Length: 102
Image 1 (cartoon, helix red, strand yellow):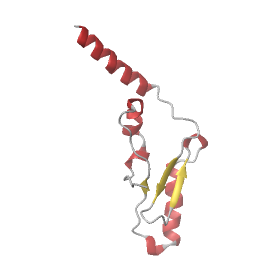
Image 2 (cartoon, helix red, strand yellow):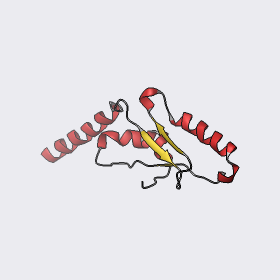
Image 3 (cartoon, one colour):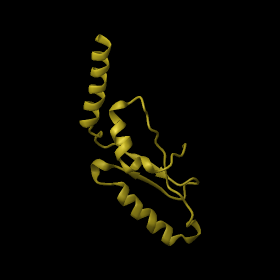
Image 4 (spheres, one colour):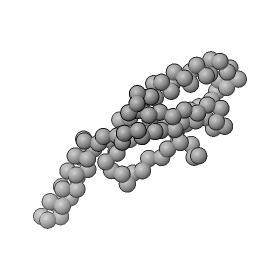
């Protein structure tokens, strides 16, 4: 019975921390192509989002036809030990970009 209560409390803590997870102010996320032809940093708290980056990347590709096959990657990892971020990992589009080691 004690094990069930402890397990239930752990699950409750994980759920609650994900429900009330607020991103850090000023947190930046870096993106780039493999050979760094295009780089971009998003700062969601300042309104610099992935949507802005997608627009800038699209414009870059239009102006530079030789790079039409470039793929944009994120340069930041998921840290599964930070369980309070699990909902962000599942919901936020920033995690859909393939990971590229810096």
